[in-house]
Length: 328
Image (cartoon, rainbow, N blue to C red):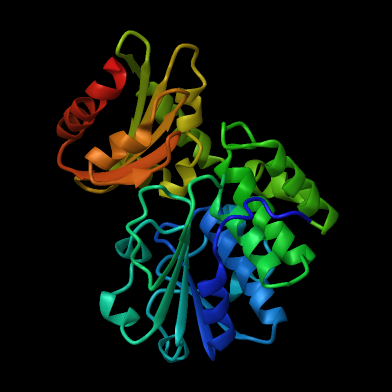
């Protein structure tokens, strides 16, 4: 195994882990496979060191992750007493304190380590290890485990593989380097089951998802002389199909796959008048800048934000934020 980025300073995080009596690992709200995979990989590693570790999030893990070892050990919802007793909290893949979905008072009196690969991270931790060079936060955990001198086992390898597979859009993004592929080989050698991952993440969708996909594709609109592609799903369509936001993960890739499209936009209504916006870009566009203008954040090629109001109002706000990027 070789470290992806040897110049990253993990020392403060290492010291905090060594000194901690009880550790709470937390993922961001509406978790995806990167944050859950990072959480699980770190959990397995710290447990192997003999540490007392608890995983607890605001929201339940997505169904595509439910094949991963120990995923059912992740608590969600109200914070139980044993989590309150933690003296160290490690947040993974969360760009801001608000993304953790917990009251700010929970973190008072606790050491907070913030590990993330989003360039827009607000540096909210007592210890911040932030590096946008990484293709996924899971890849950061791969490096962290080596600094912890914890051998990569099959459970951690499976979790990191899920994180990297999904956050690189199946190794299709510019963030995928030769070193990322070498890391992936290490994960497979350590026991990550690529067939099980593929089946669980990409081939286990509910039939109703495809009814929802029809609605999404019906909304497809190509604008800005073919450079942007927009899809949207209103809240009532989730109700109609009995699905939720996680069931539409990946829909934006249909918009991004269109020839000539530089920026794909997926607008989904999480609650009435509350819209989650996802952006995906092709080089050289930087949708992290676009999301930042709208109060969100992310990377050059993948970013997001939340907006409020009618669909028409939200579309106008996004259009306004796109102007500079499309004219550059």
